[in-house]
Amino acid sequence: MRRIHFLRRWGDDFLIPAWDISGLLPPIWPGEEGHSSKRSPYECSIVDVVERFGTTPERRAILRGLLAYRSALAGLGITDGLQWLNGSFMQEVEETEDRPPNDIDVVTYIAIPEGTTQRSLMDQAPYLFLSRLSKVRFRVDAYVLPFLGQSLGAEHIERVTYWYSMWSHTREENTWKGFLLTALGPNDDAVASEMLDQWEQEGAGHDQPE
Image (cartoon, rainbow, N blue to C red; front, side):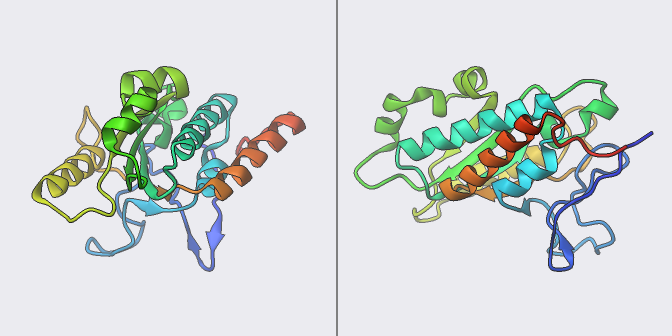
């Protein structure tokens, strides 16, 4: 029996749509026309992400890693940025593949902090910028694009469209799917971390009802 998903609302709108019958986030809001602006990537806060997807111990562990990754970015002065969230974590793989997600895929668009360079940031913390290291340390398959605050160039458009095209489809079946957009923000991260702490203290967690 498939789970019923209860999602947060803002006004009359859900922030994150429910998984579709294939266990994917829909690329366009259910019921909307194909040209609607209510489409992926769906904008939400990191608190919304934790509340929506922190449903199992495995998922909560990955969310802990994501919050630790964001905290490490903030430790380098990187607090101005946006993240696209995707991967098996954004799919109902527990139902469709009978397994938990292994990690979360993240593309982070950042503004380089004043007084630093992309090279100096990389030298300080390569585990934030190299996906093979970030997956081991945070369970985050991380990619960082330092585009914010720069003049838009052809290479920027090419990289953004690459990731949008890659993430708008499943890898094997080329099925359309959606993903999320969230901003960096230490204040929201603190609230999200407190939510995870509370669920762990309560023991029962945040499992969705059958």
